[in-house]
Image (cartoon, rainbow, N blue to C red; front, side, top):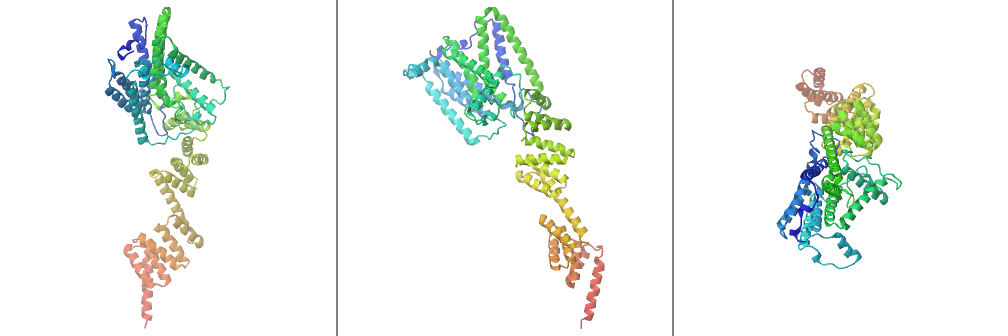
Amino acid sequence: MTLSEVHWDRLIPLPKLSPLQAKVTVIVVALLCFINSYNGDFVFDDSEAIVNNKVAGIVGRADLLCALFFQLSFLAYCKAFNKGRFSVQWVVASLLLCAAAMLCKEQGITVLGVNAAFDVLLICNVNVYELSQKLLLKRKTFSMSDFQTGLPTRLVLMLLGGLSMLYARWKIMGTGPPAFTEVDNPASFAENIFLRIVNYNYYYCLNAWLLVCPWWLCFDWSMGCVPLIKSAADWRMIWLLLLWCILLGLINQALCSPDIQRRRTLTLALVLLVVPFLPASNIFFRVGFVIAERVLYLSSAGYCLLLAYSVGWCCSHWAKYRKLVCVSMLALLCVYVLRCALRSHQWRSEKTLFTSALSVCPLNAKVHYNVGKNLADRGNTTAAVVFYREAVRLHPTYVHAMNNLGNILKERNALVEAEELLSKAVSIQPDFAAAWMNLGIVQNSLQKFEEAEHSYWNAIRFRKKYPDCYYNLGLVTLNTLGRYLNALVSLSAGNLGQAEAIGREALRIVPNDHTIMFSLANVLGKLQKYKESEGFFLNALKINPKAASCHGNLAVLYHRWGKLEQAKKHYELSLKLDPEAPGTQDNYNMLRRKLDQLKRQTP
């Protein structure tokens, strides 16, 4: 068959359908494409909020743009064939659109596989079954004449284009895969390869069910939402057998059916269904989700093609039930429209979206966490505590839930339990800066000032730009400084030795604080450690040279020490800075009388 002999109108046969029936089928297919695009499952981190999301949410633009460029790339590839020839320019345009799709979502590169399959199966009309017979059974050789002229050139162009895109992605994003945890995709961490494969196939079953019946929709499917199959006796194994029976039946019809049109249609439908889903299948690499409804958007084209073909087949083979088929399709359309309207309402706010997931994934700790966070943001902390506790119960290492629960308990003055939760959170995730800061606040409230200071410093170590933590650290430092100063003042009149020890410890913590130097110098002066006292007074004056009290007390020290000229100098500096300083004038007058007396005694 040449390119000009390809019958595009027979790609999806709808035999003996009236114009109205054909229009209904097309409308159903189009609406199914739209409704499947609505299966949004976007994961929100702990600080992200939803603001009046439309359709699949503003974060869904990447998937929608990817689908747009995916379809444009496929249409451009179709445009490359005209009157028995193909246009390299249109193939290049298809590759550029494929690159645009991939830049929106990596899944967009799968259009190259779809284009290749379309070329081989529809343009070149290769019979896969006969080809496999030649290769595997009869072991006959085949020549390039078995393929349409120009096919190798097109495949090489697409291969080179795909490799170039992957190389560009590698240069931009780096070589290392993203780091995923067990809660993101527990099946991929199963040690038993059999159980890993079984659970992957169970995920395929759930994805297939969401295509057929998009009723169980959830914004997040991680954290125990789908319990793992742990033995071959699990009843869910039935769904795996059912899925593969249906797939093998479709593959058999696509390869071995005597009806060439059926083979081509079913093969293309399976390609559209399976190829876009391959990046999410965990076959080539580990993905960071259990189920992501958004990845089914492109695959829904294959599902719609299968559905449309099934409707056409039923109408042609069961003529007397044609009306029933049409009524059933209209009923299905109404159900999908109602489901779409309901999901649209659920996406209008955080509250409705998160609470709608409780009935779908009651074992998902992240669902309970998000419901609790939304309640706390709206001021209902009593209900929020219930959901946070449930999140921690379902996932005992959920540090974000522990952090938020600890904050609420702190506000309720349940400080001991709050400290336990936050301490556990930072022990599980030592680089959790927010939990370190909150732990410091709780410890400060419990008057564990040294532990609080340590927690604040840990928070700053893991998050350099953390103004709130710097502020709290300043407060606890001031608090510590105030306690030391109060102790120095109270002990300086009694236990001078203890006062000296406290002063030295305070300087170790805050080495450049002139007020601590001043207080410690006074204590040392009373202990007649004049030399050390002088050093602290002078260091304090270097930091704050206009401190009248420091000059005055240093003058008193020199007065007692017998360094009268130096005492006179600092008395005068003190009075110059503060003429009303209490006691300084009297001490200065006493010093002057003593100096006059010494002068008279000198011969």
